[in-house]
Amino acid sequence: MTDKTGKTGKTQRAARNSSFELLRILALVLIFWMHGSSSYSNNELSAWLCIAISTVGNIGVSLFILISGWFGIRLNVKKMIKLDLMLMFYCWIGLALQYVWGTAGLLDGSQKLAYILPVIGRFSWYFTCYFALAFLSPFLNEMTEKLTRERFFALIVTMLVIFSGITTCFFFDITQDGGKGIVNMILLYLIGRYLRMYHEDHIFSTGKLLAVFAGTSIVNFALNGGLYVVTGTVQNRFARDNTLFTIAEAVCIFLVFRNFHFENRLVNKIAGMVPAVFIMEWTLRTVITTYLFDYLAWRESSWHELILLGTSLLLVVIGSMIEAVRRLLLGRAEEKIAETECRMMDRIRQKVRTRVKKG
Image 1 (cartoon, one colour):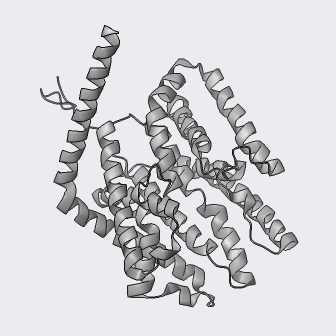
Image 2 (cartoon, rainbow, N blue to C red; image 1 turned 180 degrees about the vertical axis):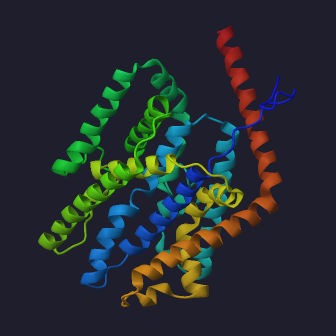
Image 3 (cartoon, one colour; image 1 turned 120 degrees about the horizontal axis):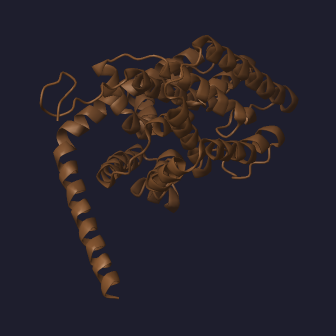
């Protein structure tokens, strides 16, 4: 085998595009900022700022899945086991801290079980649905490869009408999850796959993409603002994950970042920590308010939203440092556990196949 230089050897791996990795980090910061903003609205100004931040911030998870769809999930059981081990580590630490802080008594049995078994207990809807998506990915990938372009596009349009169009126009949420479920995740994954399969080499105008993003965001903000004026409460119904506005905004920003290519090892490294930082969010928020500074004490300030943005960035920095230490201390043990579990699963599969053949 010859590499790109013509010399005999292993094929060089394609350079990792840091623009997508930067987008992962940006998406995480937007999610954290939105979570902080939506937790408290102390006055008229903060209510409108909350609406504005949710209008843009809620595209974060959609961006994650569009990226997954673009690259395509290739089911790797070992990686899934390691991801599960990481989730359990941070959730168990979080539960232990609940007892240290004296707040564990506020958790009911199902909530404690969610800490202990985070994936099946739906501690985080995102990771629970991501696991489901990963195990469905071989079938989804095969389906997209066999469908013609026209049928694939028709499938996406049909799903958009049923699961997003009706929700956007009539408020009837067919899936009853506000888009925070496997159906919307599959839809976004398919959109990402479609873009990769049929528009990989097409460069959309960055200016036009930003114009569509801005226009969609303004309409989204205006509609949510209208609901606030009428009802007196911040609802952000048009900024939910499964509305056409949120999906359109996410696709535009995704394609903007797709237009650029650069390489940065630090960005790539931090982006690799994103899942761990994501699962740590609420535990880290309590750690910050308990041991560093109480950012909630500033919620009467006009600078409250900017403080929340700074806190979101701080969450990413602290979380990345903690995850780097965890990997250094537990990385090898985690690798061995994952390998052992994979071997056990292989043995079980072999026994099942043998029995099936005999039967």
